[in-house]
Length: 152
Ligand SMILES: CC(C)(COP(=O)(O)OP(=O)(O)OC[C@H]1O[C@@H](n2cnc3c(N)ncnc32)[C@H](O)[C@@H]1OP(=O)(O)O)[C@@H](O)C(=O)NCCC(=O)NCCS
Image (tube, rainbow, N blue to C red; front, side):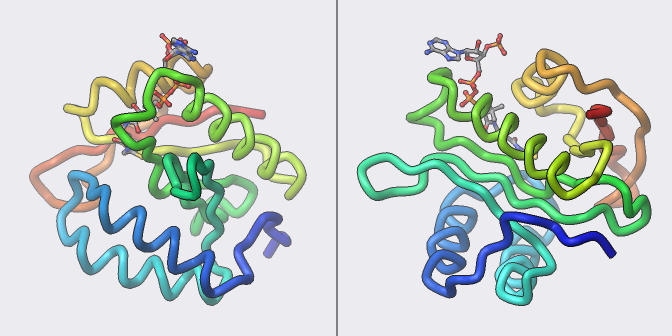
């Protein structure tokens, strides 16, 4: 297992990230269960997170982990910029930071899965140099998720 850098060691910081992802639900089945599990995994340092703040509040966040199968890769699990702060470069800066973390952790590829209806995210990833690598029913049998990746 590689040493993932940038993990959160402060419980208060984990709580703030948890509050942000809880207040900004994503279109995944069992999202409520996932965020509870995510909180535990952040506390256990099995997942990491980066975020950007404005006026003392989190406005954008990426939760990430070492890819569970392809151990040389980093996987983005939750990438979200608050709707009121979009199109001002927050997403770009977070994506750049995640690539730096992956490189510094000696990982050579970043994965991000997206629902096929999420056109904003798909366009964003394509513009950042990701390619569509695969499609898999990751969360529910009747929906194929699009799996994007970028070599570093
Ligand atoms: C996709 C997403 C992360 C983008 O975040 P963002 O903060 O708006 O991203 P940015 O501002 O960096 O870039 C978005 C666009 O704004 C443009 N932009 C950046 N800075 C800008 C500025 N100062 N003024 C105007 N436009 C700007 C960028 O050029 C970019 O356009 P392009 O992609 O056509 O080049 C955000 O829309 C989001 O959170 N979507 C939902 C995420 C989601 O569903 N996640 C689930 C799967 S993990």
